[in-house]
Image (cartoon, rainbow, N blue to C red):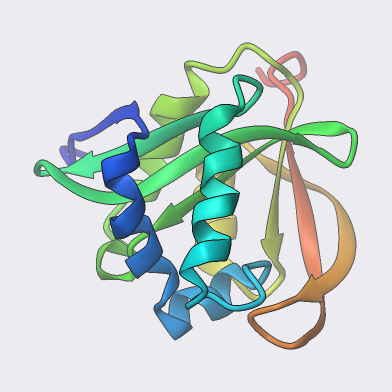
Length: 163
């Protein structure tokens, strides 16, 4: 697999690109747990200001052929350390998410790690499983992008039990 992504720290210059990513209705539907109003730039900026200002959140921009194609985050939520990512819809299905998450995981020393995916987001579930995550439990939550409560998988990566 010779995709050759690069990861670098997120910069303020990346934010307009990330904002454009979240305006895609298909991407929002698949991500499910998104902003109430993806077109609200002020809310987006406030959210990312908190992310960029927090040393407790690891954040990386994904580059492919020198283009910003997504981002990765590692953060604490629901009593666990979790990872999440967003890939521009134009780059879905090309192995970029898998390669980026694999590289990101080498930078994280906290285990176990968790990730969440809507049960019908088969692409994201596949990415997580390729990176060693396994379905650990199920949960429900209100998905802004879908306007209703949906079911999700909670996946777990525990290197201490992986052979």
